[in-house]
Image 1 (tube, rainbow, N blue to C red):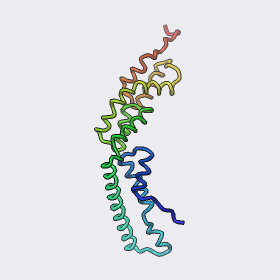
Image 2: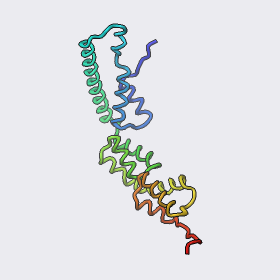
Image 3: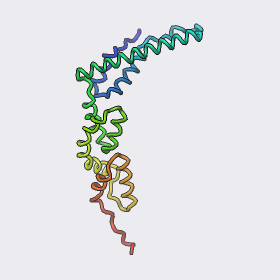
Image 4: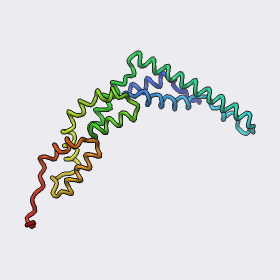
Length: 188
């Protein structure tokens, strides 16, 4: 029995029903889906010998089909944006909240920019991220390091950890301010 593949519209709606997607992510997933449902011309050739001219024609047709499919995907995504089903602002808000549980504002902004989000939409999410940064950094430190730093090397390890997670040095200093390194008794 031949498996029926959903149309591009049905696939896009099914994906959007589960979570928000960026336009770039959704376009990539729909392109993959379009390649799956495209008629496979190589399956028909079977044991036949394909001449170089015939192969060139197949590649040309495949390229034209890909371009047509990409145009269809762009039109579909434009319609979804127009109807409000695909929203960059909602995606940025959702992704920023999800990422802010593990990373600081700099890392979240970098990840969102890497996913093709505009600077304006990323900048709109930064006030929320900065307001939660101290609490997030403190929670991450408590999970990663159970006890207070005992030496300057321990403190430096915590600073590097938080810098790697995308926290500003001001936030790190604020979090580590209450964690004092005990004085050693054998130093004179």
